Picture 1 (tube, rainbow, N blue to C red):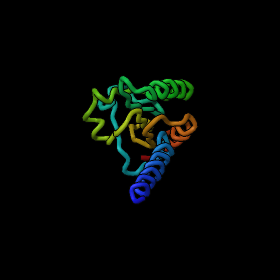
Picture 2 (cartoon, rainbow, N blue to C red; picture 1 turned 120 degrees about the vertical axis):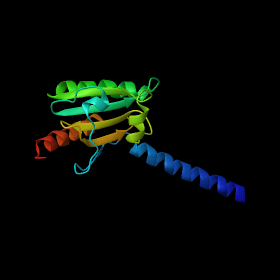
Picture 3 (cartoon, one colour; picture 1 turned 135 degrees about the vertical axis):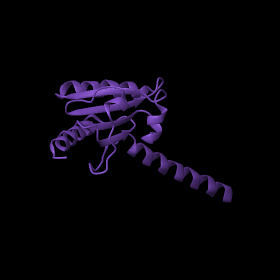
Picture 4 (cartoon, one colour; picture 1 turned 90 degrees about the horizontal axis):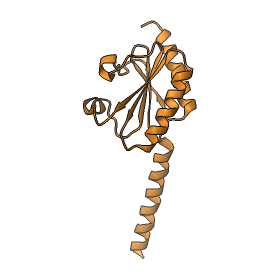
Amino acid sequence: MTGLMVCFAVLVLASIFGLVQAARSGRLRLRPVDGAVRLSAVEIGAGLGERVTLLQFSTAFCQPCRATRRMLAEVAGTVPGAVHVEIDAEDRLELVRRLKILRTPTVFVLDRTGRVVGSASGQPRRADVIVAIGKATGASNAPS
């Protein structure tokens, strides 16, 4: 009987953990501008957008990375001054460690100066990306 209760408790805890992870996956979290990480064009290996840069870390065999790539490219194509940059995480391990990336896709939204204003681990929703772009463009107009 004790073994059955332990098994039940493990199943309940695993289910709760799975539900929490699923709810957090892909949620784009906006970050405060003060003290935010700043990335340069040299670090990411591409030019920053005039208004915003959508920076995606991917791996070769990541299926959600492909869908994220398409969505971010579409969004960047509709926003004037926006650029989508994709980095192979396996080729840039030093940057992956510095940014504490644990899974792919991971997306960072950078303002025009390269300051990180939002990030998502997992495939973000289009609406969340658009909200983060709004924050990035508003942050880039503020005096530095």
